[in-house]
Image (cartoon, rainbow, N blue to C red):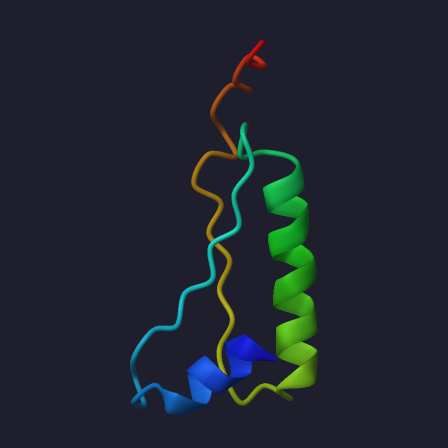
Length: 66
């Protein structure tokens, strides 16, 4: 897993950030971020803290581009 390799090479106390995005920021990206966070936490046995931040969850959905 590339995220694990990056975390292993990062100095203690430093942040490793994984960004998941979709057009509206409320559906796919939010769901994927939740699933990835649970899997990372489980796979790493709590070795690393996992925080989820949904930047646009309270914003209106963007209109689809034609």
